[in-house]
Length: 167
Image (cartoon, rainbow, N blue to C red; front, side):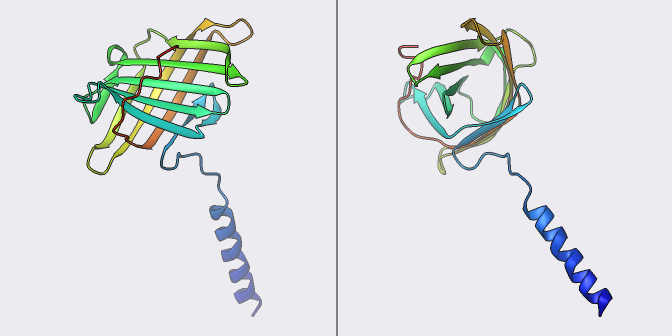
């Protein structure tokens, strides 16, 4: 009887331990990454195209509190996008209107976005990214930011989106 009880308690502890692991992967409509080795996860994501008729450029815009990331791709669907096919920016605000610091994509060869699933019929976009940003504005913010192990899992929206308007 003691062995049976011990076996049940052990099984329950294993279930609790494996069931309570922190999930850092993005849910649908999410972006997550390690930003300078700290967890970063978007609270909202918007996608869109420019121009809408030909969908030449895909925008992915993620927001986490006062921090914003914009990833712009020369649209080709599934595949690997290298530095010359990516435009990306990151900026942090105070009160959502005053820019504390802004960053542009650094010119380094390891910048990469991989779109692993792109389906306009089901409106899904999944992928991964590693991006290095260089500061362009702000004094009390780091010179560079590095996003590693980035994950994108979002719904495509068939809308015109230009997050750079006014930026």
